[in-house]
Image (cartoon, rainbow, N blue to C red; front, side, top):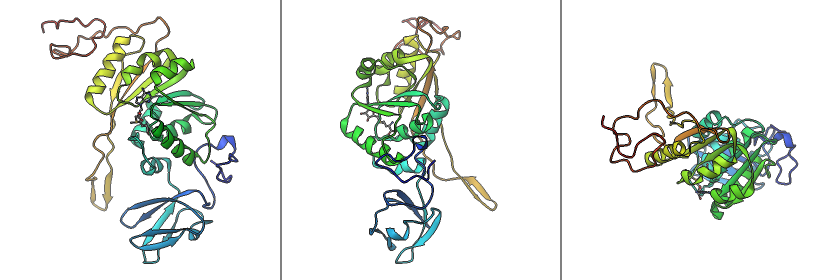
Length: 317
Ligand SMILES: C[S@@+](CC[C@H](N)C(=O)[O-])C[C@H]1O[C@@H](n2cnc3c(N)ncnc32)[C@H](O)[C@@H]1O
């Protein structure tokens, strides 16, 4: 955390790369206004500028210089709560190129892919840079996040978002334009963790396996069950990883008011599935699963990759 000035020019101390700022609100920072109905407005503070809503307007100058956590009233009587956005709020309101990893899933990735201070993490694709912000915050200024993105327009969006969030060029971040399957082997980099958020993560599995240090973790974030199946089977077929662990996370808000204590009516029903597996040491293979596959699991209708030990023709049950 820092009390240092906001810094496109790099005057934030290197141990302060959290994206969190304290002290009075400053020109160039983003604020988040929430009205009585929970509607959110995010904007950058600019001297002399006005914010307009259906409740009239507010002068930015009324906000600049105040400690966050206050309410202001607009010209037509609208009341707004004013805070700096949290990381989880920033990533769902920032400009998007591709779909972002939602905060509930970033939290799972940080915990279950075991992202730690000082880690060297590779990720692809960078998309809008939402996951990148969480990874950078977790590895800190002495770690390294190497992001790969094959679409230039998305890389540009991500660069703007990440720079905006951290208030400058994060010293641990390197962004490479190109396909991870080609660029990662060419870079020769070795890493502790690899996060794949893309349509076809199985295409990057060989490159991931070669770059991961023994004991490292590959983690894929996939939106559909068909992708989930293909990735899990591809990891098994590769043989250089432990048995993959697939899961999803569901988060439900609760309404708590007097005796009315119940789940909320709305929730984000589906974002994506997660899978992790650990890299074995070179030449080592994980023991085969002892259990027989479920009847029909690899039956005549199954056309994907077959893990070692699974015959081509399904055994009679
Ligand atoms: C869903 S978006 C990633 C979102 C990002 N994780 C975020 O939180 O903002 C998927 C991105 O992967 C990129 N992509 C797909 N395959 C890739 C590959 N093999 N190498 C690099 N980027 C890839 C796409 O261009 C797209 O921008």
